[in-house]
Amino acid sequence: MNETTLNDSAKKSEAVLSIIIVTWNGKRYAIECLESLRELGSELAVEVIVVDNGSTDGTPDAIRAQFPNVTLIENHSNLGFAKANNIGIASSSGRYLCLINSDVVVPEGCLERMVEYMKAHPEIGVLGPRMLSPDGGTGASVMKLPTVWNTLCCALGLHLIFPRSSLFGGFSMDSYAYDVVDNVEMLTGWFWMVPRDALEIVGGLDERFFMYGEDIDWCHRFRAAGWQVVFYPDAYALHYGAASSDKAPTRFYVEMRRANLQYFRKYHGRLGVLGYRFAIWVHEIARVIGYSVLYCFKRRRRPEAAFKIRRGIACMRWLSGDGALLTTPAKAGDPAIRGSA
Image 1: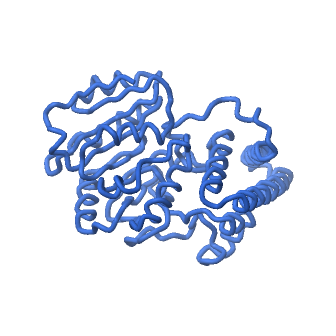
Image 2: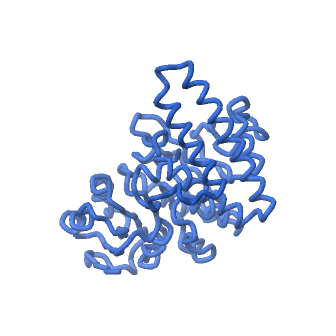
Image 3: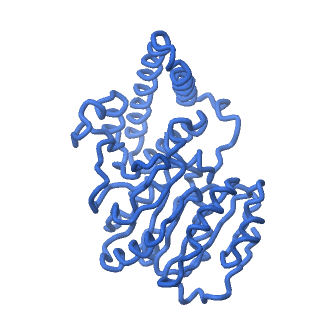
């Protein structure tokens, strides 16, 4: 790993906020993200740390040329989203740390409001802003921690029939209003702010989660240690990744399933793993049947249906132990990959 420190103007000991961004072959997004952070520092002592996971599209060179006040850490290969963030955390000094996806644009005042809110509420371990989608809507960033029951509710479509039910609403919280400050179970890993004192107790991201699942695990651990996980709508940022959620490549859809299975192994034991696998079988069988019917009777929706059928079959092949499915290793940091499917 080759580390190049480019900011000598602010001493690390004075940093209030450390911003950590992981990049991998997303130069356009990374540049736009860093541009949005360029004006920070007038009210906050800020350090920006970029950890590049072996990009081959010129991302590191562009960052060196355009952002001399950024600390750039270059990994020679893709070490995964969790490990890359941990490398950035280890090089940081701020009282608060902000982990931001490289496909996020941060508007003026967002980080300042978040820092002030965390200062006023020391019980918070993870704070997340409202996600703005490119289409102007609000993206999904709040979920429940997965259980066998809420996964099965989603598999059976009960979350669509009873979207506001605490019993049948599933884990995705599709009817969540995103309009009030709320102590929640989980915030997706597109944009987090955490205080260093909480981080030192809870620890960094679990590097066994190469991509996906690290957000579920981290929120679980913060809550288990007695810290609050809080959604804060008074701060907001644009996330491009949400735009790709319905078009995520099949292998990354399966990677999300794999990460969730890893979470169940870690916290729910053998019975939990069996229950999760059963719920996913139910989900994929039901979707393959449903989209097969749609393919036969709705000509205009055939491309979508065909994709969902292929995706469901691929997931069932993985559940059956066919390791040949994932012919390309999963990568972290690509906006399309970090989006949810």
